[in-house]
Length: 489
Image (tube, rainbow, N blue to C red; front, side, top):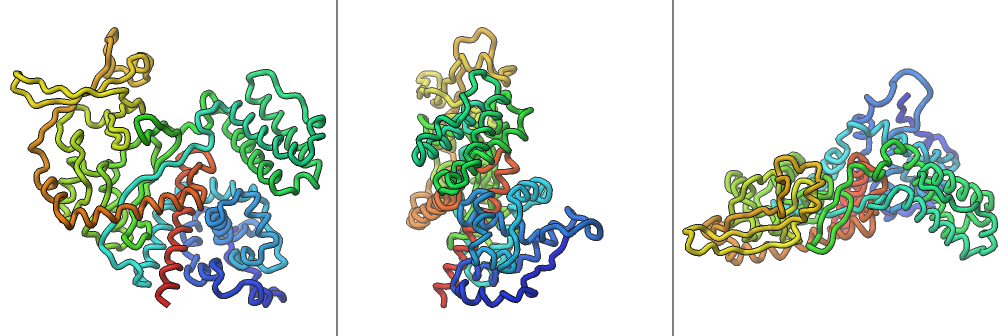
């Protein structure tokens, strides 16, 4: 049964918070800034309202997730810290003597209570609403970009990933007590994932049987990670034919580097408040999400006149969209895209970082060739070449790869007369000045990755990525709002 009744005001020890949680404490400021009752309104259909025992209040459960993002902690570590950190207990609306939850409750809350909830849009909308009310957002400009997040499981096999995490734990143990080598069981010799899982469970059990050892932070951190990995793998056993993270895809940062995971497409105001975000699999093209980012930003109540982005956003449809909606598009033209025409645009997308096309299977072209085609009275073209061996076994080869072909290419025709208005605009002082502000979103992406755990997904699946993005972005937006409010005082 859902409940929003807190024991805080009934505790005889409540005055301790005035002594140990100062007025300028960030968590106290967040509690004063945000009315979290909107969480109950959003989740009330996920609970029984008049039957059963009281559940942990949903606001408190959500705040646990928020603390995870603010301090980049695991489920186990955020609960453990909430046991003794008075600022955490204050933020969670707990009495000083209240017990904490079981860490497994957070997994259940994410998967049972947050399923089918548009949490990402809800939380971003709430922070933008606060920023507008406090007159923090005054600009009519958004900056767009994407940031990539590595899959938790990368492209290692399930067995390899389990081996890596158990090895990390054993290594941390040996640095403290080398004699523990004699207590661990022999490593499994089969290729069965279940055998590796059982081995990892035994390693965990042995470490936990040495409480003095398990309590050492360096060991405890690796122990908690292995715990969560075992739980995640156990739940996804039926999907382990290739990778636990079946939603993750290969994306490309440059022609020579790639990642396995997800992208989050982001829009941010000039004041560095994130106004929209769209999580996708890793192979998706940035430019395809400009219009949706603008729409979501406007839905929060923000007025937009200018959109700033890199060359990925200068494709033909976006230029037309900007003109139709009277928006200034500060995105420099890329000759391979904006000056050309091409067939099957929905099957081949351009990766601006690598300067290559990517097919719908995620394969990037290996090389390109510029052809003048003199004497044919035709415009020049650029031909992109794909790895024919991969095409032969591609699941999308029907209608794309011709059986017996010795090569697979994709061409675009260059037209230098296209987009003259945008070409002229990008040479103006105004365009050049506004383009210089794009660095702001790159700094925001770095903050998400290095301070809030966005570098690596903390669970598998696109849904998990959405929840992670929702709490991380909510956290960075609140921190930014507090900083700007403090500067105004």
